[in-house]
Length: 129
Figure 1 (cartoon, one colour):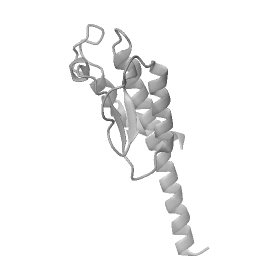
Figure 2 (tube, rainbow, N blue to C red; figure 1 turned 90 degrees about the vertical axis):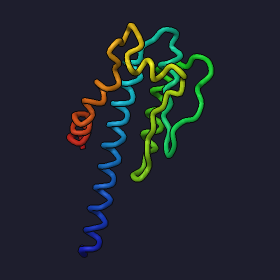
Figure 3 (cartoon, one colour; figure 1 turned 90 degrees about the horizontal axis):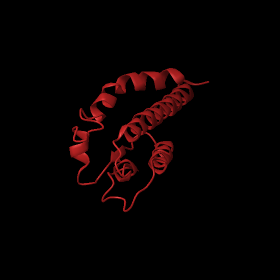
């Protein structure tokens, strides 16, 4: 085996592992955000949108279940390739208000607490590889 072929094999391995870590981290963190979102009608929780390349525009009309939002997280994360960006967006007009603690269910917010555990999630995903 030549140095070039060893290098190429190692590079492919690193890229593959990196993609798996990003995918697993996104699924864990994004799903936690959806599941922890306060619920009155379910519209806010179901309006989380996961996209590749650019943030979602607009909002989902009607009420979409939590399962649909999490299914979208899984499908977009599984499609992720190194160099792309995964976005999670909630474009409802009151999303920021709720994220900052505007709900009696989550008066201290919840997104920051999940993000505080981000590095631990990355480490856990890396250990799986």
